[in-house]
Image (spheres, rainbow, N blue to C red):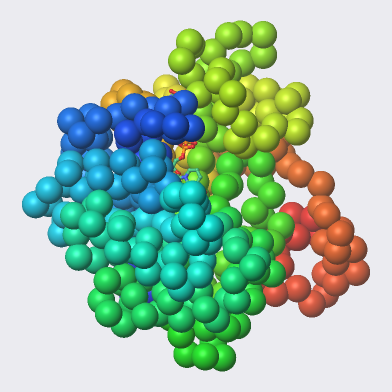
Length: 350
Ligand SMILES: NC(=O)c1ccc[n+]([C@@H]2O[C@H](COP(=O)([O-])OP(=O)(O)OC[C@H]3O[C@@H](n4cnc5c(N)ncnc54)[C@H](OP(=O)(O)O)[C@@H]3O)[C@@H](O)[C@H]2O)c1
């Protein structure tokens, strides 16, 4: 297992993170998994044996049950791993039970600490944008948690680039704690993040934790043209993330993954994970697994390095058109592009 610095922080994180959205499995999360405390213990043990040092959860997963299971499964081993959790989604019916107000963040952190059975959270992430709470209120609340020792680092998730940049600007001008990472969707199914979120991370020194790196299973090789995926697979339910806009392209990408995997004697899932782990600014991919076999398979991707030919085949089959202003910059700004710009435009200019 490799370890990478999380953004500009001093924290080293394994290139694979254990996702726990399937721990518990109540409400909408039942489509993802129904892993109980014993199952969680086995998953955590497999992950730690492979060198994983970060576990990602959220207050909203199974309405708190995922955090509770993580806490119970870790028990006295809590100190041996890093725990990332999140706040922002609704946790009750009260109008103040959601969002990124000082009120909800402080209450959310206290509740997460109780459920996790710990007195600190290693990485506390805002789960989603809140366009109605001033950013200085959100950042001041997060900073107070850092100052009190209840939170060690803060991160964002699912922010647009302008929103994240604005938050970094508030931290800079006020001296409040700064986000060290962003947790984002990024996979061979949709490389939208390369347009702005990845260049922002390169420019601002933010770590990237990737959620759904195999698109919730779509890239595992079990969804093929004209073939039924095994019963019980997530995308056979009414699960609608990530949205698929171009089914043909997805199937072409899956065929390339399956062929590259077959030539190496590994699964398509491992190839899809290795591809994202190898991309600029990516710190770690957060893998989900319904079963221990899936987790064992996914953990093996940490040992895989794709060749330039394999990467460029996958780059080509999953390529997306440049959005404005980037197609124009590719044509007319090529003489003065910096490293962050080139992460997107490098392959489009001569
Ligand atoms: N910040 C956010 O907004 C956000 C959003 C989503 C997730 N997350 C985080 O990211 C983590 C991972 O998300 P995810 O579960 O969507 O990730 P994923 O790794 O893309 O998908 C995992 C799913 O794919 C299938 N699968 C996994 N490995 C497989 C293999 N080797 N072979 C065949 N099928 C395989 C399983 O589903 P089936 O068995 O049903 O096919 C499994 O539940 C979550 O646990 C959570 O911590 C964060």
